[in-house]
Image (cartoon, rainbow, N blue to C red):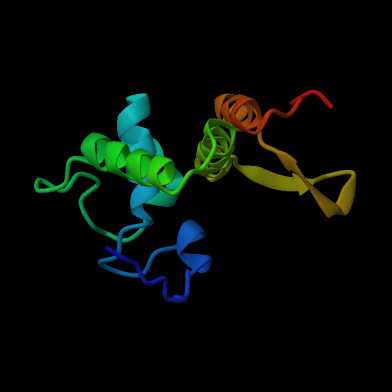
Length: 132
């Protein structure tokens, strides 16, 4: 048995904006399924004009496959936890709405209360103090 790793391009822009008929990265849907989060409530997952649920894809099972792959590649539990926290943080940051700061036009501020839950969840996932 052997393996071959090839380079490929990850479209970072797909995280924040999908083209017509495109889904975002599978890991985002998998994490939502594992966390029992409604995919249709996540801004980064509802832009490609495609169904948020695909009948032939079991996202929870697919995440188990990803986690098994991490284990077979000898990723430490700590590293896997860090990766999953970053994925969750990115997803929740997509739900944070910002608006111009009326006191400084070069700055933006979080629109509250619209984004309060998303800010809390993103900070929790990323291990950040939201009041800092």
